Length: 40
Length: 182
Image 1 (cartoon, each protein chain N blue to C red):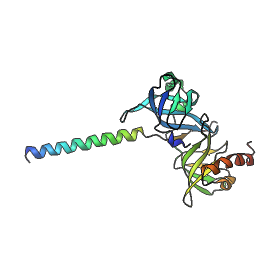
Image 2: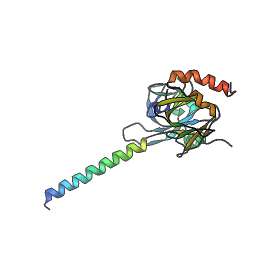
Image 3: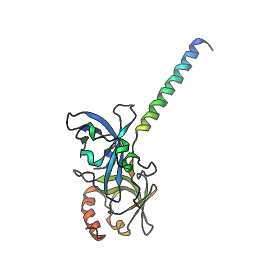
Image 4: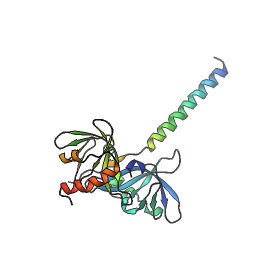
């Protein structure tokens, strides 16, 4: 494989890593509606 | 107003108009029938969770487009906030819970929480996905069994399932009167 192919491969891997980072980060910001525990 | 509409709203100070945080979680007490507080994210597309939380007593107003607080000091550190707000049970997200009557009839699944507009976070009912399909609304009694998987409501709730928010408004008072709560 020549240098150009390696460069494309590295760019694709970096792009996928960046996409995964954004998705995980956005999911981490997602909230919910929580009920408190009943008091004894 | 629905609780999910609060998720993601900016938290803005009345004094200064600063946009200090974004709402992450809505925490409410089914026993008391009102919100107890909000957890927060930092502002920005990829910013993470904010350590401070917002107890309901520190909220100036919950509006359609923003949650208003007096100033940034209204945000409380977890150690200074009520435990329910500082450490919400991650297993107690009620959206998606089954709604079951005491008699064992499934009314559907919870889609959202309905709040009284202009109140300090008073919760009056639930929006549900009805077991037979379609959207419905049920009034919230003052006392309710809520776990992380099922919402157990009195048998008479079945009679008070309404198709829209206007119907729910009328049903809340009748429902609570029938339960002897008012």
